[in-house]
Amino acid sequence: MSGNHANPGKTAWRILAVNTFAFAACFAAWMLNGPLVTFFADRGLFDWSRSQIGVLIAVPVLTGSLMRLPVGVLCDRFGGRVVFCALMLVSAAPMYLVSHANRYMDFVLAGLGFGVAGAAFAAGVAYTSVWFGKDRVGTALGIFGMGNVGAAATSMFAPLLLRQLTATDLEGWRTLPKLYAGLLVATAVLFWLTTEDRRAAPAAGGLAARLTPLRHLRVWRFGMYYAFFFGGFIALSQWLIPYYVNVYTLSIVVAGPLAAIYSLSSSGFRALGGWLSDKIGARRVVYWSLATSMVFSLLLFPAAMVIHTPGQGVVAGADATVTRVSATEIELSNGARLPLNEKDPARLLDFTVDRHLILPTTAQWQEPVVAEGQAVKKGELLAQGTTRVFFQANRWVFTTFVFLLAIAMGFGMAGVYTLIPAYFPREIGVVGGLVGVLGGLGGFVLPIVFGLLLDATGLWTTCWVLLFLFGAACLIWMHVVVHKMPTTLEPGPTPPAGDSA
Image (cartoon, rainbow, N blue to C red; front, side, top):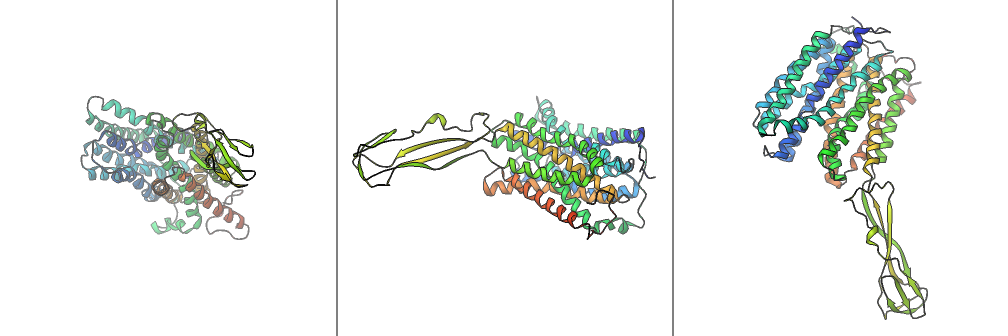
């Protein structure tokens, strides 16, 4: 049965609410290895290298990303309700087995298993889309996308639960994956009891026909946009905590809530982005989201830094002999008395105190390079000038820019997924699945590249340069395609009126 109704009824909105809750539960489970493995490392429960820890955190992200395409194909074949419910039950089993893991490979295999929960996004998109018409689908998918908040919930509350569970016995951590497994099972039961089946009109032909849309360049372009928006969301959700700790010397207790501002904001504004996509067109939303993300990535690039550079020195005005030298003055035999700027320790600011500075501050001083009795020529340097520029990259300004970047990325995620049912109404599952795969892979690859750039340059802010360049590539490709569309259309379904992306 098709769900393209202009005015969705109470059933559609109820199912959207249940769908969003189920997605949030799956997303929370998908992100569990981050705080759990970090807890193991902090407490020394397992003797793992940094690379092994990185693999454990990344494994569920990779699985959930790669499974989105097959899950999307299954949704087109069997319907989103059945697939979504089955996915939660399948994920619950390996999640429970984490509580019995002792060896490194036990954790790897369990992570591969419960990582399937990350593919819930493809099932949810397919199931949500069939309940809403083209004039409401952007808003609906935006609201559904707010389930991303599950990532922030795990980042904020899983460490607190671990603290309580291990207060008397470190082995108490084993209760946490059991709780998450129970959450998945309970959510699956609730989901099944409160939803009903509805499927999009199936595309003609078998599996090969269902995969036909993947031949269109437009699908891969949508995937690139989503790799930037969603991949950036996942990457920064993991990266911002160590960023705050290392760049701003904050404790994890303080860094966690500050990083959660990004996750919560990006998730929350996704709904508004979907509504805006319905009102002004998804193409415009994606276009301006890319441009805005580039602007804030560029503004976030300046690092906290101290720069020493040669400043204005003092030179002799005529041939003479130096008769007296002090920290504040040089006197010459011709009677000239040349004042010097003395080095003031009070102006030599450092990073140990948050001084709430927004603009760079400078300190300038001059130090003699001549001695008493020395003959000097006209124009000869008597005192070397030094200028010291101090920029603290105020953390509240930084957090504000991160918040604004989160809004742009939330809008962009909603915009991309509003385009899919508009262009591929009968292949929402498979197209949404592939776009989700590419987005998830962005979330898997970007943190790795962030780390490589940090190792190569020693600069934490190189992550913003990468995001700026990635966003620029997406925006340029989109601009070129849109510019050419009046004369050279991409192969694929006819775009809806007013939205020729």
